[in-house]
Image 1 (tube, rainbow, N blue to C red):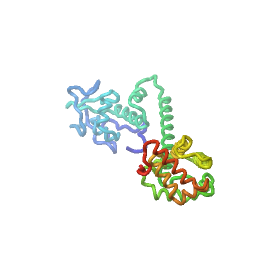
Image 2 (spheres, rainbow, N blue to C red):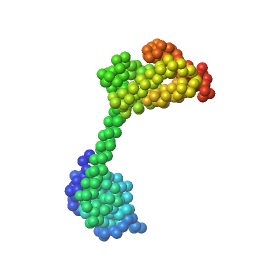
Image 3 (tube, one colour):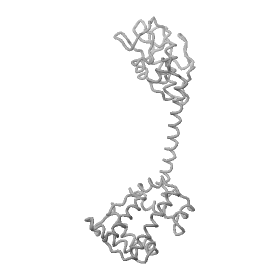
Image 4 (tube, rainbow, N blue to C red):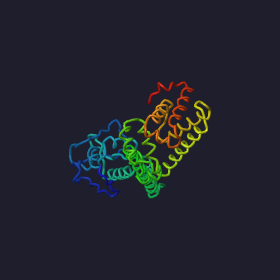
Length: 312
């Protein structure tokens, strides 16, 4: 159907006239019909015999660009019925019927339900302007929701492609001068096909500089707490060490959920990867190795053999 709704004052072909978009009209010897299909009712989807001044259901469907099924339904519920019947029993729409149908189509296209349309057309107590204003408000709200959804989808796409939705300057400001803005792209290239990257992107799409600042502060606070605990001589497997292991899982959940097996693998990488090891050793010398020890001890306490842990 056209993007422009049918106008309420859409021209209606007079009985016996042929509009440019309409099939020929045909004479009826009809009488008013008082309801839905009866035992003698017949529907003509195309031409009927003879000259006439009514339109068949097929002609009306083509003229209004609606389905024959819709016209039958509107007739069945008494919303818009054909008023004439030919001698052969075919039911036809008059000019007045077509005018009502035009109004039904107009109101349907702007989103009114059929019951509401019936009230607007038939109930004098229904304020048409109020009904239209209320519908306009609902449509405006829906448009606003769709715009917000579109913006959210754009950010989700960007997050899946880029990871952090921050400029290079914002990344340095949030994560410190030691941060390399190239890291997110490298992580995307390495992990982009994994479920964890998808979970990370979903979280990243909802974050701006302030939210990432909170994540960075939580990570920094955890690093300091780990360094202080190691320096204080906290032993792996102790309650304090186990609490730090749980805190690490909670903080890391800002990126994606971390199971115990995955945490063991991550701690192993912290110790073996030169970049991660340098980061933790900058907090306290030997911190990467100590962190792996407390993670392994916590895993054993939960019935997990660290040597058999795999990334899930």
